[in-house]
Image (tube, rainbow, N blue to C red):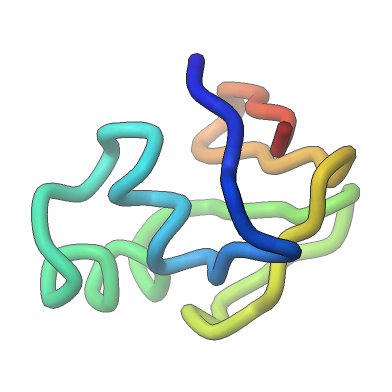
Amino acid sequence: MEQIKTEYITLQQYLKFIGIADTGGQAKILVKQLDIRVNGEKEDRRGRKLYPGDTVLVNGKKYIVE
């Protein structure tokens, strides 16, 4: 997987980056519908900033922000 090129990426952008959402509108809806946890904590804010090293669980599948 490619690495992010900025200091951080928002959760909404990350869902598109990893291929879970095709568009920003779809990502906005999915953030509210899916079981998403960032570093073990439930997250439903699409603007949540993710930094390299953060762990994201989406419906039980683990991703690490690089």
